[in-house]
Image (cartoon, rainbow, N blue to C red; front, side, top):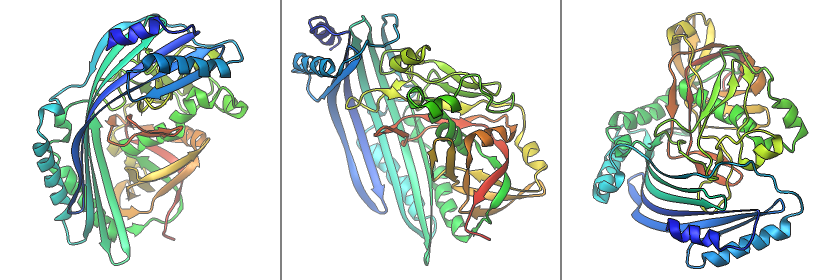
Length: 457
């Protein structure tokens, strides 16, 4: 396959730049919804794309068969020629020849479909049978073995084998008109062991859904809030990480001012990282979809905005270096600037110390939804607890955190010592491409003056 692609590149018509990406994928899907097995099976797929650059114009063609690769190359170059009207910009990179395997542990391909089915059925039964209040459940299993070939006209020739495995649990509880749900997901490149021995996690999801039926809605107002590592990671990813993606910035004057390098965004202890080099996390890789090596990039270092995330094109347009963050969910899409594993670095505050001085606050855990609009954000915690006089109290629900990301970062009062990263079967959405595998996380953090909207009074 690699030689076939390289030969096609060598005999292609002239272009300023040309790349070919081909993917061979094997996938297993199992879906339980309530008592029903809704989907089970294995599938294979092959496809790819050609991307050409001529006079600053891009041409892009995706395909599901490689038999007519020469024709697809010509189409991409013609498309680029029609759209190109300026000098092309692409940061030069050194040619790379490499083969990497992304994945560890037991290969899911070595496990029978029957065994995977039985494991999912067991988890599903644990959720459904936990309580009479459980109305329905959902267990979703996926594993994915993908061979990604990348060859470009500059001499780069890369093959990456990726072995992903994950599972999701959802429980929905109902008491009259009161309906609550809980959810958790696990997914990464650590093999089949990622989805094994999760009985306690399935029961925790069911228990939380039932417990939320009895929880009171929180009273709205300003609180000192402690975020758990998962909600901390979601906040950092959604509210700040997307703002640091360079394709949001370089053609937007307001964003250029908001996201000016060297600007202070928090206390000296605040460090935000995007790191695709972490081993076996959901957002890990050796090379991005442009063949650029993965990097550990400090977005914020010692409270100062330090780095933007780039593709080769955005780096050229902004006079900076590529960061290895050009990603696509599959061969049907062009690579765009995306995060990988994004987290807030831990410091030295222990959790007990973090809450001990809070007179009236909220401990918010997990994430069930939200949205961002430039620097404004709204997030809903999956569960939350009142903090009274330094102690965690009753479970509350309908906790919605709202604010300005820059003000909120400046209001961080304490950063914990307990970093945890979370992957899963979901992922990041942007530009019509979802879900892209990512991990995010952080330690516990304490933030003052957070506006909480709730259903209480």
